Image 1 (tube, rainbow, N blue to C red):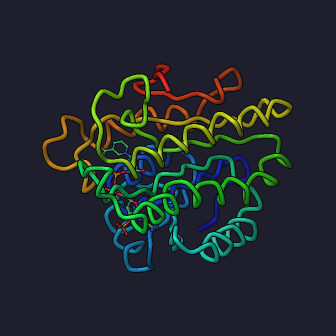
Image 2: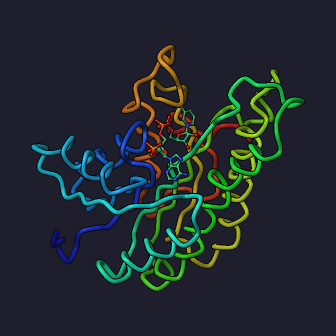
Image 3: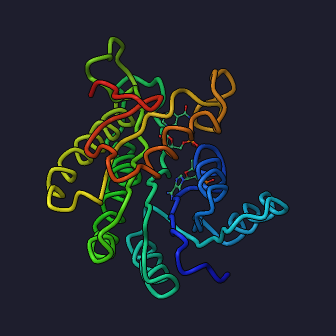
Length: 239
Ligand SMILES: NC(=O)c1ccc[n+]([C@@H]2O[C@H](COP(=O)([O-])OP(=O)(O)OC[C@H]3O[C@@H](n4cnc5c(N)ncnc54)[C@H](OP(=O)(O)O)[C@@H]3O)[C@@H](O)[C@H]2O)c1
């Protein structure tokens, strides 16, 4: 797919369903070209078919977050195809220990969650940062959760998922501090709220589209927008 010379390029991981899908769709609706990743080509094709008829500038590429080589391939594809990346949304995530006791958590599961929810987003940020620095522009959004807020945590459980998102929050803040000399590169964490998705379940009060609102807002911040923060409903949320 050819894109216009002045068209921004966004990458959204885990975009074949849920909040990632809605984020990709809403960004593309703003005229941004979206590279929406899915774990395999078939899921990517289904994603494009679902969006068929909406007249959006969107394409897909396979990305498996547990495989560092997959991130490398994704980076090379973006570099060769677009030569730039304006927006990176680290959305792909897992929560296999939902509501489980931390005392029963297997360390293998803990490692897997850290791999997908923390190491993989960091790898993508590290890969794409030179491009963003070169172009002097970048918006990075890391999908977090209010369950990671230590200030607001009054209930235990879900240790792996919440610790991983807490680490993602810390990483967001610390990388933003390292980017002080690049004010046009902004990196923030978004809590979408409890949304009806495979991860959130059917009892969730919000739609995936509602959850994507703060993500899209952070992905399209203007020059005066914040960096290094944790946001829910377009407002600061306590770490
Ligand atoms: N839903 C909520 O209430 C809620 C609340 C707070 C935060 N969040 C966060 O929002 C993000 C999206 O959640 P969601 O509710 O939309 O979840 P979801 O419906 O389960 O979708 C998760 C997405 O991540 C992808 N993914 C999972 N493991 C992957 C891997 N190893 N490699 C590449 N992609 C992988 C999935 O691909 P497959 O389809 O191939 O599995 C899917 O596209 C997550 O980071 C989550 O922690 C969600």
